[in-house]
Image (tube, rainbow, N blue to C red; front, side, top):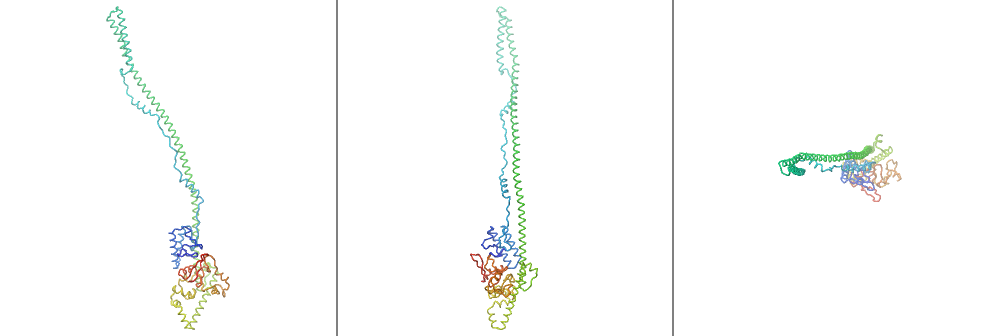
Length: 504
């Protein structure tokens, strides 16, 4: 599961389990150093809980380790020793989504160019208006009228001529002698033209006034013509501006339509992608729950198997329901039962023989007692690990110690798992294997029970345990503890990668 810092390929407690090729699963998954440390801590928690026999704490540590692994899309399996990558989601629409996102992101702002501007081409318009509005009032004087001197000169000349003619004619009538008549006639002729000159003044005034009015009228006409043309130009500008706004509005709507189509297509792909991702998530959650359910079933089965082993070790008979719940076949349970019955019988016989021998020869018994202080300590109630370790070195088996009343945790709790009592070589174990009536002498038959799967160890594997000469069959937890305590030596062949376990 999550466990000790000394991780091994087979180890069910490896916090960073490796396969036999030495692959670092946490490293393969790209796990950060922080999470590796957290996984290590979860492994330590699991190991401590396992040593204390606290299954709930073991499960909690396992869940903690799995949560860390889940961040890196893999699971360690039921015991944390596997690399089970989760199926990752790969969107079939990622290329389209990326393309549309790029188009949306680079979709520029709307630009239709500058609008037409109006510029009055008639700068004199204001000048004309100013001249019209600021025109001086009409005023006239004959002295300033350019025609008055002309008329005056003409009428004065004509008056003088008339005066002279009248005087000449009158004098001729009197024989050339001046007379009052002649003078009077000449004066009248001159006055006539003087009167005619004065009569021209109103005419000159009227002419000057008419000219003033005509000029004013012409200025109005000029201003009107300029205004009309300017209004035509402005109307043309308004038409151009209106057409520009119409075209710009059409272009802007097309711009928005294109953008909305991109957004709509993007939303459609994202929506479909989200649907597929949701289904992927549902399937992943289902797979995860199924895995958790399987973990629970496996754990329950292990507990049932431990109960069945305990009953068989004690010489009892498990019920049919417990047999089925343990996952063992009936043939396997019967084999275990025969094996444990043989061990119990041998232990009882040896104990009886030992008692008889001590009665026959007190001196020999005293000598043996002196050689086995561990036996005396055990009988006095000292069931410490040191005493158990010494007794095992003296040749006593796990089953003998349990039969003698040992109930400690040295063997993983009441001896748990499958354990063979014999020490030494293959020959010493013949005749004592489970289900062997009268012993097994054929090594091929022996291998049928202790088959080497060739995965990671040169030792023989039996059921859920591995055989270590001098200690019997130890389950994985017991073997781990024995290695950590220095009671079992672990060696690895660098060529094959396999481990060999032997008693220290």
